[in-house]
Length: 612
Ligand SMILES: *[C@@H]1O[C@H](CO)[C@@H](O)[C@H](O)[C@H]1NC(C)=O
Image (cartoon, rainbow, N blue to C red; front, side, top):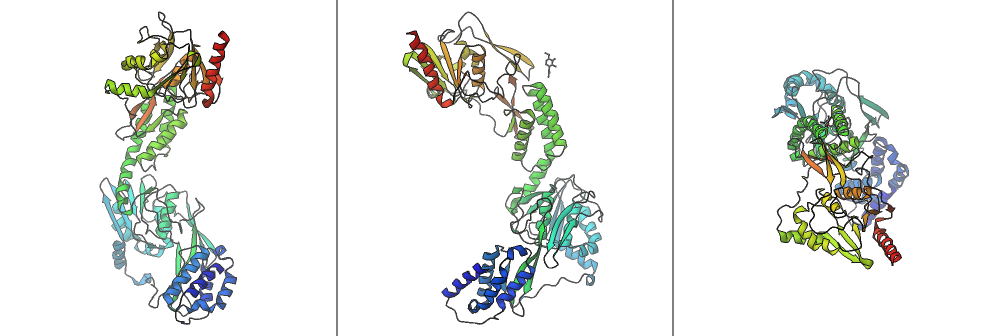
């Protein structure tokens, strides 16, 4: 508060207005209202002294225009307790709205009033739509309950999903909260909905769901969406926050206003100044926090005017999700490279869906993320995932000239001291139909060297179709060697990967040294090459353990959802224990990837200088 006074004082000295005297106790009267009513008394520490100081400071009161004074005081309070809900206003014409005394209004008139503030209809797709602008309190609810049931609730109760529209709900009564929440929860167990600390009485009351209600509950099994706007205020925010944190409703729209569970406008003495002050605060038992001040954050953020369409889309998606999860489970069971893991993942995925974990998913993007996370968790395989990107097809119809350019930039060759060859490429492809070009422009530059360093440190994998051919260059003609046994899940067959008898260009042969450089990035097809060359004792591996990827996965469409599963469908020979997939391949000589080339060169240089 002393900060506020400084601010006020500085405003005062820079203003040049005629003096107009307000009551010298105005500030201390206002401060006392705050002290006695503000919902978070702990934030008012130090106010006492500030009030004393303020009472002596008659200069503040010399601001002539009462509205300006009110706004200056509002700013002062805001800077002291950081709560924009507290307002000082000057309103000579203000008349407090007295709630009409219930017993005086005939039920028919009440029914009309309610029909005026509540709108109920059934939208396409059997979606119940209920628009509420004012949340009625207990007394009113009891009085008009039968009318509400007949004209509103029974109409939308049989729907298969419901949209509660709170976008223009700006008033309401605290006692109405348990009613609304109870209609969307089960009769038992009873749920602790909210704790409300009331400053005036210094008592915290707990709001609980109600065991019995007039009419039928909507229950917990059907989707519930709450629409919000930046204007949604007070009691409606409480209901939205509560149902959101109970995981009963999905909030769609804008962040709400961040009002107060109970806010009073208190007249300052016999002046025309008023202090609007939150007199109670809500503490949600699930989060231990409140929606007050900051508002309720939507689960799906869209402009308020688009919220209804977004909600309808969410409800449609929710109806499709069980079928989509089932389809995903089947795809994994039928196609995943490791059949027993595939069966396990499929079964568990169905169980996860049955447990309700997919029920609140609001968007395809979140469905995709959840599927991916579950597939990873259940399989332990980072290659098995959901994606919305159809993997790019390898360029098939490029002209020979374009291929030549592509190959020139894709392969790097060099010949170092001691006639040591160097070959780097960062992707495996379907090289068969460009073998001539590669032989001529790449391979011929290194084939006659005395040793070859193959740099796969940045090789991310790609197609495995050229692996057998590429390996063949490092073995001799005349004898076919088994490189790997590759199991293919969709056909449930294992095929031998053999060296080729016919090659384009010359062989490097089986005698000269081959060193392969690896890093943690080296993945997929590149790992298959490293795996084969290491297991057959044909190359020395230098660098880091490889990525631990997989044979190239295939995309499978999950129904018509636009979501794909990326599923590895084949795996390397595991007869001699686990292959490289998931685990990577350890190098013979472990060095940081950065140092691998120098290490390789120095090994070879030492070797060749020893020969001289
Ligand atoms: C795969 O084939 C084997 C026989 O080669 C058979 O025993 C097995 O059940 C088949 N697995 C699947 C998943 O079809």
